[in-house]
Length: 347
Image (cartoon, rainbow, N blue to C red; front, side, top):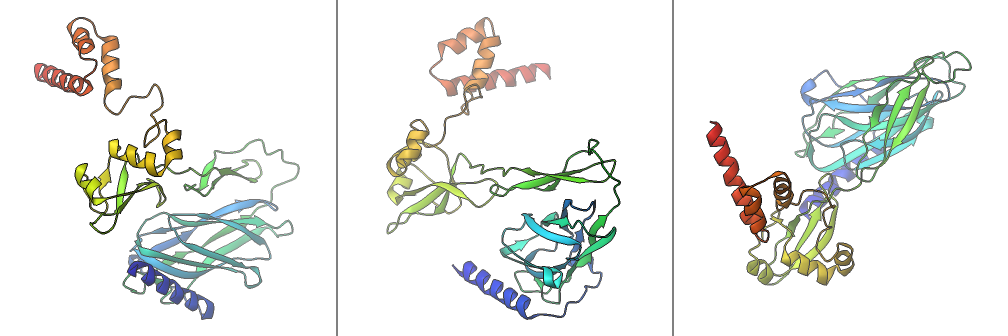
């Protein structure tokens, strides 16, 4: 709760600073505070292009408030794509030739990659030439969780509108390049350039979808007075699914590590909890707490390895394995011993 209150307060301070500030300054070239770079891309009249804004030497930034400037007489802002940041506010002000950008996280983020990607459309009547895209900010618009002021260096970029000739068939495109990585829920984009005239072609990359872990994570430990909470977490974002409650007694009976952040493997307990609390999920999973593995894939208990060896073995090994078909873990132990013996023999 304290983290949420602190984040909200910091975001409020950033928003007020953004709304009432009017004097932007350029940072001195102190790369210790980070180096933000803006792509330079080429396009034709009528093209939509994506400009990536990335950061290097990231010192760890919690919040930022800035203005992304562009020439609205030649470029029309269309949309943005997510980068590594998780909390965006993006507002276009074409009458002021700028885009207001506010980001506020719950902790320092120190990734060195794309922060945000902006898509612009080149106007049909834009004259040929270079149209810069830059970032303006003032002291205090970048800060870490200690509220230390940061002044990253900005290297501007822009859109170069080139003469392209007439009646090009756009049949000689270069390779696709990813312009914006997709996230679990947000689509990304890729673009390619006609090698004859410079026309830019953009195509969407579908959202990747959530990749939930097979195990549960304890989100809140159980006590004598209140139940615990556990859920399956997405491996790539903060989304959770299959949220279950459990009692302290259940955790003790099933020898669960009842501490926040600990991992609970699928078991008879999770099957029981899903069956009671999430009956539709239990039914969809074929009577289990998690979806059944696809047929043909190696089972997690090692049976796939055993079957492979059985299929390709003759003589004593095959007979031994077939005689203990109901004891999978005994099979695994036997195979491990055989492998160790073979390695020792080779050495």
